[in-house]
Amino acid sequence: MTTPLELMDVARTLALEAQRLVAAGRREAEVQHTKSSDVDIVTQMDIAAERLLRQRLAELRPDDGVLGEEGDDVASRSGITWVVDPIDGTVNYLYGIPHWSVSVAAVSGPPEPRAWTLEAGAVADAGGSVWSAARGEGAWRDGRRLRREGTPALGASLVATGFQYTADKRAAQGRLVAQLLPQIRDIRRLGSASIDLCHVAAGLVDAYYEHGLHPWDFAAGALIAAEAGLRVAGLDGAAPDDSLLVAAAPGAWDALHDALIAAGARTI
Ligand code: IPD
Ligand code: CA
Ligand code: CA
Image (cartoon, rainbow, N blue to C red; front, side):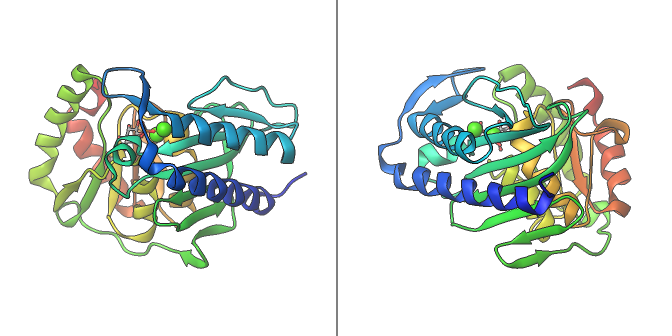
């Protein structure tokens, strides 16, 4: 049995290798195709980074499964599946905004958010920081342990969020954020869900919520936030999934969740 810390080592190594490839290819980045809408883009570097991650996983962890944004699912024979986002924050990457990451997580059990157990994760960001966590062991930014304390009041909270790529979903998310904004300190929309979760873990924002996330957007970041002491959950406290993810200090979670529900979170 591989321990969460051993899986975290693999996640860190591979996330950093892919981050270096992606960073080196920035100047040549071009849109290859679009997905859910014309603004949901894939560059050749998303594809190259995912290829690298899959090759390295096949070498190091040949019996594990893979669930990645830019490739076909590989079924697990070991019980472990790697959930990878080769570039999280592709729009930032294309524009040259240095705020994107490579996100690599290992989960056990069925590879879907309501059923999996997060074992380990790493997020290698554009600046070269590696954020990581292992189940039951804690969370780190590079060598430094992450530990959130305190319970910020909703009205004093700086809240990160993000928006989906389809126009009708964005319209609904815009209506929700318009209702939430007068109740909080401010909103941040930085463009990378995995880094948003790391930022909550580090106290760079107080809380984060988003509707419509894919498993690879949040698998590693959710474990990093949870291991830093935050509550990471979805609608009514269920496991987070594509309906909703809310990350906040345990004592502040209900107030943000309830404000989101009152603003229409159930209907997005
Ligand atoms: C996106 C980013 C963004 C979030 C979107 C994600 P991508 O991932 O994480 O911050 O708001 O929901 O899809 O497309 O850059 O991998
Ligand atoms: Ca993503
Ligand atoms: Ca991506």
